[in-house]
Length: 562
Image (cartoon, rainbow, N blue to C red; front, side):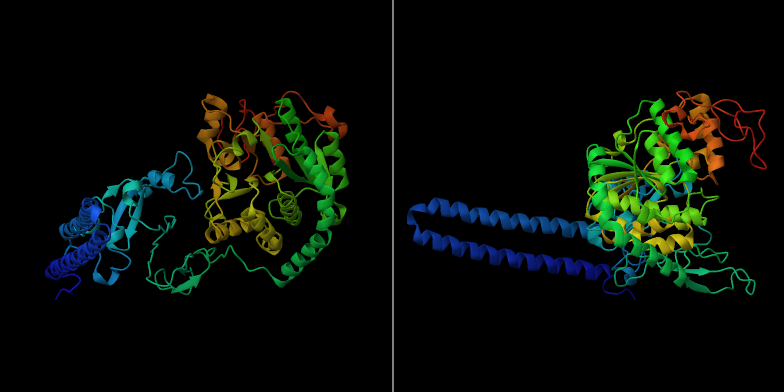
């Protein structure tokens, strides 16, 4: 037996009852208006005509309200879907009464959450639409309402504007196609987080017999958890770094203020961090920029040792070294991503950006393994002004970096209270950096939380405009279009990320025609070449000229120049 809510006869009776109530309201309102007119007429006998006009205006207004209500009632009646026709039943009527589809690109252009959509040129046709659920009849679109609610029809495809016209709020849930994934919507106290249950692979169970258990966002099916809780030792180490910083931050700010004021352009700084082991890459950035005639006036290099301070100063850029804050950081380069030296340098990067932003500046932070084709500030200072931070896209789509896949080696920070708080919070995350071996992962966690909690606006930039390691190693067609066919405009920058160590970074830069540093780093300005120093190393890696006679780097590598 159909419930009263689903019974068509009951619905029509309810509509008639609503109409009767509205008519009673109309009568009362008209009577009240008449009383006002009578009072007005008795007080102002010479203004009978205007009193009559007033009464007519009130009657017309009330009648217009009634007619509008009747039209809505008729629309509801014409769009009524019986129980056997409804897409969803009565038990979901308070959170799911209908659905529609919207083209994915249309939706994300209207509601830009800043996350990268997909790798350019590689969309998934089976994930090209957004599914929208409506939690009540009042939220349904003004068009194709019956199709939205009907179980006998495919949810209609609408524009993002039409589909969301009556939505008071929209909860956007991003999800990636996964093996046997289910999505449950539970009517409950509001939550801005997604809880996960998973069947973790266990040799003690068959494929479908292992139980669903609650897991964190970094849990993988094979049993690895990418978000290990920092150990007590890591936390103590973080406290030591934090204590050192807090004891010396005031003196550091005092020394930095006149330096930053002198070099800032339009209240903007380019901040870099370097030790002696990475000085070759820093010098190449400086030399390549000079060869292109790009100004480095607002570049400030935070040097973790005196040798690097001397090299940076000798190459003509502003350098800063604080012995108390950076004194214990190693001078050698990191041997590989995530090792101890790498972690210490990540902490120095946190401190440098926090200091510059805290003193009131917009900051472009970048790693030293970057070459500019054009000054990126010309784009960053004016693009997407509604966003607080702009990041280069990393390219990785693992849970570690979700949802932004933001590369922490190149990002632009606009000075405001939201970014100040974000960067202050990063000071407390060194134990996470140590545990995960990744500054990027720790920052990504805060970006996700602060975007949800404080409406921090984070935008990830196009990988084709701000290219890096993903394009170099994975997007062969892009690199061929850029270097061989030359049908693509050069990106603003090239960041040699996704590369194991400094030696490989240098080799790849040489192949790309982006290396401008001569052998002797200590010659100051004379260390720079005016022309790119091109050299082949691997035929299976992108190169500005054919390297067919060189060996392959990867085991199954194929020649880049076919």
